[in-house]
Amino acid sequence: MNLSSTTHNKGNAQLPPGSLGLPVIGQSIGLLNALKADRVDKWFQERIRSYGPVWKASLFGYPTVVLHGPTANKFIYTCDGNLLTNTQPPSISRILGSKNIIELSGNDHRRVRAALVSFLKLEVLKQYVAKVDEEVQHHILTYWKGKPEVQVQPLIKILTFNIICSLLFGIQRGPKREKMLPLFQDMIEGVLSIPINMPFTQFSRGIIARKKLAPMLLDLIREKREALEEQGDTHKDLITSLLSIRDDESSTTMSEEEIIDNIIVLMIAGYDTTSVLLTFLVRLLATNKSIYSTIIQEQQDIASNKASEEALTWDDLTKMKYTWRVATEMMRINPPVTLSFRRAKHDIEYGGYTIPKGWQVLLSASMTHMDDNIFQNPTIFDPNRFEKHAPPPPAFSYVAFGGGPRMCPGIELAKMETLVMMHRLMTTFTWEMIKKDESFKRVPMPEFDQGLLVRVKPCLFDQALATNHTQTKLNPNYGSTLFIDI
Ligand code: HEM
Figure (cartoon, protein in one colour):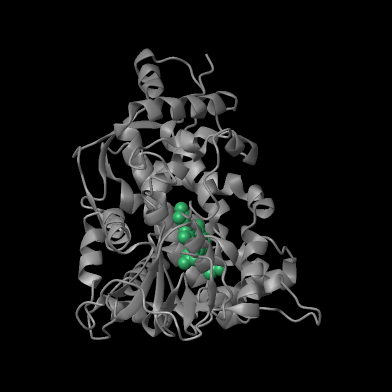
């Protein structure tokens, strides 16, 4: 079967194999149950075995064609917006706004994406490692230090919220952030909920939260505009950066409405994803001694070359190669974003089948990530798959961050947050799971049953120092453990 043949349908091809199941419900309940039980890769593999790499189902209210394999991923991620669109259900744009990057296509998508990337690109973000580090250290001091037990997942969500507030929105710690956090949380729950707009449903809370948040964001944008006109610092934060982008006629390229919709979408896209990755890493390090000892060695080497209160730098992050390999492997086995949907704009012929106009097209990162023809022994956690000299996986088979023109623009920020947090946590504490087999459900984002409850202890260094009363130069703020200066 030639999977790369994709054209507008000439009318000869037939629908893919599979079943649409019951009206409306289709296979949604089966997929939702598989998500909840973390069996989604098996759910897809069973169907691939029965039907092959192209099959139909009815999912979340729409007839859907599911495509599997790197070629299919490439088709979905890179095909012309005239074949597949990224339009979300109207319920989602009621909360996210109609001008957010996910909804846009063609020139509008390129323009807004270029504006976001002008701040999120590596060359700019590199300058903000110390700012992320400061947020992380403050977080550890506030929520972890001195606590015998912590619920990791809710805390790390607070951390990712605070980093986005600081770095992207330029909102300092204080009442403004505190007022915004529950509104963002309601919006995220609203986006992920069943869209029934009745009093007290999650969906209606999401809509109300947007109505409350939008004027607050508008005030923020206007404050930033005034500050920009007075002080002229264009790269202070993402909002300021967006306000300073001008076209050839010196007009701003993004309207206030576009800025509001896009900062909302950045928060929603960046909040749960990075926190899911970090939570899984904390769990892994509590249970896998061999990976723990290799990462701690890498982190201690970095810490031992720095003065006690010195902030991390970009150069330090570039030395955390093994830590990032572990994170990469974690996202292979547990991709934070499991499902990506598109919609057929016309009848499309793909691999000898028709995808009718209006149908959903779905890919799941788990399908290629857990395919043993691509990743040998896919259930085994092996960070060395991503070792410098290992053969790279085929293009479009590792898709934790998507691919093509819509590939995640937050990848460098996610990497920076993950590495800084891992460094500070590991050089400050050790931890163990309180319930060894605490499980999680994907709803659709993974949520640990008890928020991943761990018992936290200061690192051995801290303990040794505490008992010996040795004269040391420990960082008074977060008790970093490696800066022994006897
Ligand atoms: C570990 C963390 C993250 C993961 C795994 C992740 C994953 C993804 C994936 C798979 C997509 C593509 C979805 C598709 O094509 O259907 C995506 C898009 C996107 N992500 Fe991320 N993301 C992460 C962090 C972030 C962060 C920190 C931000 C920003 C603050 C962000 C902002 C976005 C935006 C705006 C898009 C839409 C891009 C477009 O449509 O052009 N993400 N992300």
